[in-house]
Amino acid sequence: MTTTAQAASGRTVTTNIPARLDRLPWSRWHWTIVIGLGTVWILDGLEVTVVGNIASRLSEPGSGLPISSGQITGIAAALYVAGACVGALFWGRLTDTWGRKRLFMITLAVYLAATALTAVSFSPWWFFTFRFLTGFGIGGEYAAINSAIDELIPAKFRGRVDLIINGSFWLGAVGGSLLSIVALNTNIFPADVGWRLTFALGAVLASVILLVRRHVPESPRWLLIHGRDREAEEIVTSIEEKVESETGEQLARPEGEITIRQRGGVSFAEIARTLFSDYRKRSVLGFSLFIGQAFLYNAITFGFGAILTTFFDVPSGNTGYYFAVIAVGNFCGPLLLGKLFDTVGRRVMISGTYLLSGLLLFGTAWLFDRGSLNATTMTACWCAVLFFASAGASSAYLTVSEIFPMETRAMSIAFFYALGTAAGGISGPLLFADLTSTGKVADTVLAFSIGASLMCAAGLVAAFLAVKAERRSLEDIARPLTAAEAGG
Image (cartoon, rainbow, N blue to C red; front, side, top):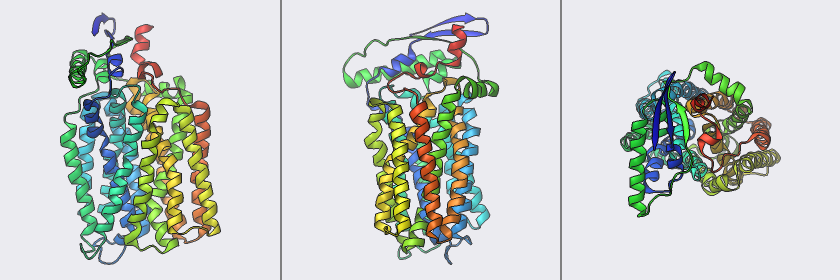
């Protein structure tokens, strides 16, 4: 139920819509949200993995693209991440202003077009340009999708669902790895055709997701704040009717109301004050988590194939097998540990996964330096590291999407993603490409150690600053700015 009253500077609304959404049992309707919004990470995983695995083949004569392996794992990788950072900031602001649904449709369309045009690359500059624009679309997806997911999923399921959805990136990585094996097989496709088909497939999959996503509604929480409370009421009532029809039981009475003063938008000054004054410690937490995971993942994801070929003489056409194995380990982390973020709690699980992955990476670096690893055991070590790291990395997105006020949610996600990824995701691939290309074990050990140090540092920050957000309403974790005005 929602009631409204006129106020001096806008309509004041008292509503129980957030409580009604949070008390819903899990249903088929929630699965449509997961499928409609979460599947884009599979595309992201496919994109990143394919590029990493085809780097060696693209640099070979006859690929149809005069480009070196270093340019792909270094420049192209950095441009993809740079595009994602710029896109996150650009689209994030529009997501808070225009709404979640409009933006998660637009950003997917941008990704689709850029990926399709990557497939017809004929020169390095074309390839670099559309790698940047592909990232530009993906960056917008991070802000729009994570905002919508957290605002539509019930509080008691929010942690595990968010982790699994963000972790589904690695299902795409498995697909990308296996796809690259087929695409790089010159007995099936010519050297200048196979890699193009992998990008074309990404565009086809994006088209299918675009059709499914049309049925995902706008966030009722966003509608409430922006003066569209009648539309929000209709959406929530429709959801409740679907859930009651599915379960055959009447829903429990919602507990709790909130009063907000509706408004059009939030200024950059208010966003800055919220992040750097009102929620300073939470901002330190978000930045630390993103720096650690961004360096580790963007450096290693783009460079793992080069490590196998440089140090273990694995043929370029076989690196996909190894990457598929560590991708499965990555997805299993959020899948198996996700529930614990809602039960054991955020602080223990976030700090624990970051610290464990960092310590295991230090151990991997030590074994690699001793010459104790081969391609198989190196892959096994990375499986162990990334099992915990993937749960931790996914929790970074969960954290920044739930610990800041509703009005700044998408922009907060965009800001921390862009800042953390720019620091670790752009410098990571460039540095890692240089270190692994030397062929010196000590240089690669150094890269491993830097990534491990940053993960451990982020884990220590989380141990002190992580917010007790498990099973709590978003409005309870961070009171909306408009609610504070209405109350004051």
